[in-house]
Image 1 (tube, rainbow, N blue to C red):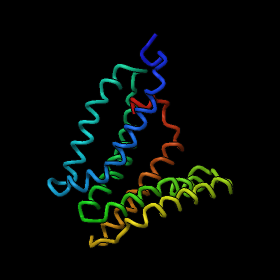
Image 2: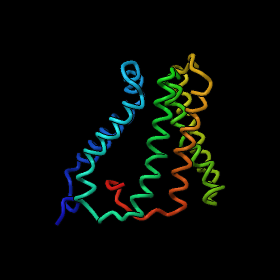
Image 3: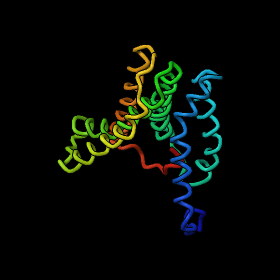
Length: 188
């Protein structure tokens, strides 16, 4: 029996999920404060490097062996979804695009994925799914409205924010289209 086959305590997964949400959500605020003291790309590098070091033993010790092809695919998607997505947001925040606006744009990823699913995957969302997506986007907008401002960043920084969100959405849809090799999440 392996570690993953044992039934965990009922509070393990809710605790892990809460920690993930808190750490992920704090990223925008953390980048804003870190950008005042260091280069944002350096902060992003160290964040990614240290996360990789922490997770590497799990990837090597648990689950199937990773093939070269799977590794190359995951590296390409990692560059798109982590470096281009987070790096674009980090650069935009470093250029003083308001953090609330960056967070709002990043919250539009599900809407972008829904829009890209039809032309790339041939998947049409039902009216019910579009309504749910619109309600979610509206909720994000309503919650964010009070903290939104345009700031004084250069125009290219705002474009970069939208482009970063679109890169993440596109990478997500393309990854589904090419049917990447089944790989446990801890190895990807």
